[in-house]
Structures are given as C-alpha cells and as structure tokens.
Length: 249
Ligand SMILES: Cc1cc2nc3c(=O)[nH]c(=O)nc-3n(C[C@H](O)[C@H](O)[C@H](O)COP(=O)(O)OP(=O)(O)OC[C@H]3O[C@@H](n4cnc5c(N)ncnc54)[C@H](O)[C@@H]3O)c2cc1C
Image (tube, rainbow, N blue to C red; front, top):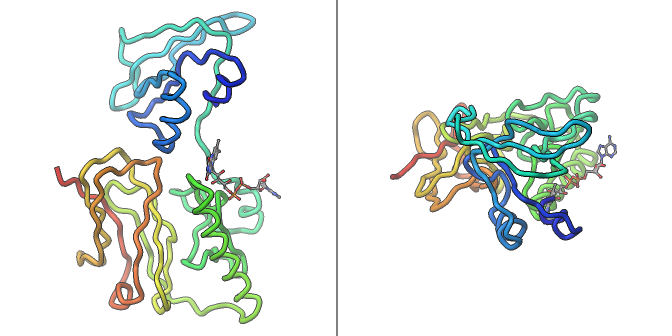
C-alpha cells in the first residue's frame, strides 16, 4: 500500500511496525519501501492521532520487548491520512458453517497431508487454510487438495491412522497438523518461525529422537519454510512429531 499510495501521488512519510521485524517478505521491504525511500520504523506503534474533523498528524513511539511504548521516544509527523494494514487471517465463514475444526495457530482448518479437513469430504487449500506469501505455494497446495478431492469422489474415504505434527520452540505453526502413518511418497511440512533468527537449526523430532534437521542462515516469520519428510522418515514414528528451531549462536 505504501508503494501504491506513492505511485498514486501521495507522500508516504513513514511505515510503522510494532514488531522488531517486517512480517512480510524481505523482497517487499526492498521493492515497496527501500526503492521508494519510504522509512520503515520497526518496533514502533501509533500512540496518538491528532486532528478534530480530520487527521492532521500522528505521533508514533518506540516500543519495548513487551510492545509497550517507551517514554520520550515520540516522533511526530504532519499528515492527513493514516492507513492501517494489520495482517491477514483466513476467511472462515464456509469452514465454520460446515463444522470444520480450526487451528488456533493458523486460524484455518486442521488438515491431513492430503488437505482433507477433519470433516470427511471437505478439503481446504490456499489462504483459507493458512496465509501464504506466494501464489506458487498456493498453486502447489491447490493441486494436492484437488487431486485428493478427486480421489475421495472416485474411491471414497481413506481409513486414517495419523501422527500429530506440532510446533515446538520458536516455531509458530506447522501444517499439515496430521500425517497418515502409512503414506507412500513424501510429505512437505510447512511452518513459520516466531522471530528473526540467524544461524539456526530446524529440528524434527519424535519422542526426543531426531528424524530430520536442516540449518538456516536466516529464518524470518514473514517467509514460510518447509521440510520434506519421506515415507522412511515416518515409518518408525510413534506418537507425535514436533518441529523446533535451535539457535546455534
Ligand atoms: C497485498 C498482497 C500482495 C501480494 N503480492 C503477491 C505477489 O506479488 N506475488 C505472489 O506470488 N503472491 C502475492 N500475494 C499472495 C497471494 O495473493 C495469495 O497467496 C493468494 O492470492 C492466495 O490465493 P487463494 O486462492 O488461496 O485466496 P484468494 O486469492 O484470497 O482467493 C479467495 C477468493 O475466495 C472468495 N471468497 C471468499 N469467501 C467466499 C465465499 N463464501 N464464497 C465464494 N467465494 C468466496 C474471495 O472473494 C476471493 O476471491 C499477495 C497478497 C497480498 C494480500
């Protein structure tokens, strides 16, 4: 929106983000803010909106680790418009009407690896399931859900014997939340980290046993990550598998 407003002739004086990092893609910060010299104030929030009949200015302040404004860090901007852009959440009216159980973490449906929800015959993919950064991931997920729905129509329901996938330390959510034990082929498990991490290790474990791990130079909450689990990885799993991020210093 900052770039669009600039292209339409507005002077965007500041983009203010309460978190210490951008929750969007890095490339969007570069292409939509940096390339247009729009300042990004991280760890800042609006503390006062000025004006009577319309906006005449705004005060922002730096926040501490608990997102509380820090005294004497105010910055004032003269302005006539404030635009709020406070994130995306899945649009769940259809899922709720169908009685589909939702995840508190993704705010979308809980799904198996084939993207069937916990209501038989109802499949979900794309932003109704979890917010995607790129349409490429949506297409991949839509193909999977479409193929699974087609198989359901042709062959009926699958007998489920599933493993739960849960998020551990420093991981915000994991999707799918359930994986059938006897699958053939690989499963791509998507997740998001909870903070900005450098030199970290993502670990997938079952009862303390490492199933798979991978190192990440940079991991950002705004950029969805994934790990591929093979049929072999899942064969000996007993109980749930968890994904966590370890800082390597
Ligand atoms: C500002 C912004 C910029 C982005 N830029 C990029 C980019 O540059 N490159 C990129 O790859 N991705 C980008 N994305 C991400 C990408 O747009 C999304 O990941 C993708 O559009 C999600 O696809 P979807 O089909 O799941 O959902 P949507 O594209 O949101 O489609 C869902 C559709 O369902 C309709 N709908 C909702 N409820 C109902 C209902 N009850 N009945 C019938 N229809 C309904 C909605 O109206 C909507 O048309 C961007 C996203 C945003 C928000």
